[in-house]
Length: 257
Figure (cartoon, rainbow, N blue to C red):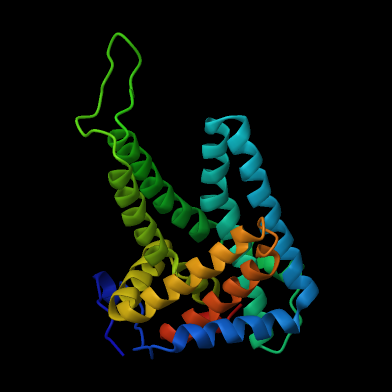
């Protein structure tokens, strides 16, 4: 267990974390599946929503790229976290031997709306930087005539993939434990992000395996024309909650709500 860094007024910058065993991600998935089985209809409702959003994004990508990007932006930064909040709270209710309810999950999401929006702001800033770098890599015109500004870096598929991969890893590291911590401890976005990054850094091998499993399951979801996400999405949501509970040293603030 690490000691959290303190700032002004002895306020911790991030919560402590535990060292994780390499087989931990498989345990998280097993517990996520157990939660799914304990509340199958409740879980499937979330899965249907995730799948419907995926189908909508595919439709938008065929209509116009700008609509696709706007839809992707909303899905990643607003809709996704909001739905994840519900899954984390559902898993938390199951953990407390309660039946998950949409009413409780909606109330919890509204209670944490300020922290959620601040986290979305941080992610949106990262997303905007990603788009700017992609625009640079792709050597596109980013200003209208007569003042075109072209990137100095030529477009290459490799450069595009490198930029996307770097920011994808960063977003994964930020979101690995941040949202569950906000749900559980009413933590601020800054504290949750710092905690997540610290826990990921101290358990790099385990989190790398976890990311690989997420990618494999995501590939399975896409291979089924997104229908598989009806089960995969809630299971991953529940598993993420159990990953947080195992990795992060929780205080007593999470017991008040």
